[in-house]
Image (cartoon, rainbow, N blue to C red; front, side):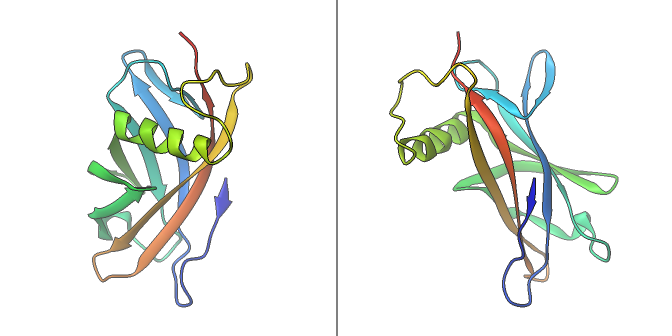
Length: 138
């Protein structure tokens, strides 16, 4: 996981993990591009002095994909993204890595860095990234 500072006066935010949620529960760090599911879940934490309840969920994006909804759970904001839209975005990233759809990925998968951006209700931007492994298996 990496921390990225935002803009010159920016807030350092962190996307602690990006999870694939399907009928069997949560699966951190690996996403099968061929499996079924509805949501991709991200947990967002902010540095001390900031409250996740102050995040304007309508501004949260995973790459180009807008958040479908979000819910504060303690000191984390759980945000859900449409799985099909995220998979399309990942294929776009893989294409720019020289991997064309639907070519098979290496057996061990490919690491892809995903970035979440957004703003607090006062307009302060945040940005955080995490790497996940993507696989393409039946």
